[in-house]
Length: 405
Image (tube, rainbow, N blue to C red):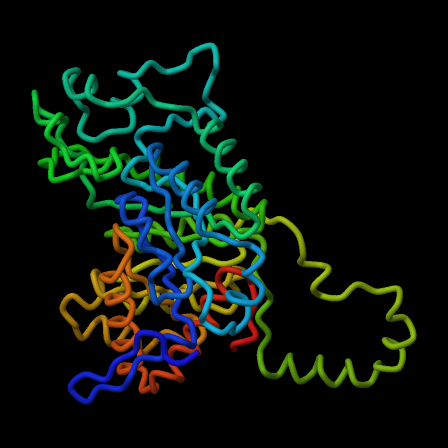
């Protein structure tokens, strides 16, 4: 099949959809009616995120309908031929905007004999302390243990599912409760639970509570060896420290050039002995395989952090593989010098692209093409080189396949 849906307009290079374009982060479950557009999309696959109680099972429904695991090996893990319909990779998790709806019953100080009531919970996790009227508008909080149990069930159902969207957000404020009569006028096509244009209050979720909810989900992802998609806004330093705490004590040993040379010489001198006893030794992979308290691969979605934080994430001692995803909506709505410099600085095998859009269809394809063109221009890649590289990066992130390099 040829370049599906590609056009040459105003002399621009035709877009090579046939090579496979993969959305690393999107939210079509916010507009369930757009689900019917997925099979007509040019993108090869959408990595769709859950965020709150109302959309976890909707993500499951999308995956039941649009993920054919028989096609994963040929069409997603491999180059494929581009003729199969767009597939969905589900992600399940609890976004920091909704973390206040969870109470941490895994905290050692928690006692089931003194389960917090709704009022005391929200007064503990929201800043400034909310009044009773606002608390009455909030849902009954659910225990973190229940959330993790639900996530585990979804992840075990879908072998290729991720954990996401999770993270930390210092700037978000809770929306006002629905005013009398206004809820009846809300847009029924949108999945409930989001802001939907409501005015914002002054209330924020305590950072330590966000960290606790995030770390619990990171630990589960590590246990089940699943990649994660992470949200970080106005909290780049805190987010890095939270992630670092999960892999602390598991860092890779980083050798100097002199030490690498010395060990290489010693290894060559003892090669015969090594060969003789190879059957009685374990490979480095076997030493490191298995569940860990940190995820194997992490995507920082629509990354907007400064370059010094970027350098921290690229430290070779970090045992997790860190990817950086970019979108038109967040990173290139106005192409700033900062965004250009960050894209230039990210290694070619760590870049992902995303739409971060709330509905599937033509607009999502347009945003994906736009961000691919922007990244290719900044990196000095041809479209064929860039689309091929980005597809390989997505496969590495989702499946752990790093053959793209």
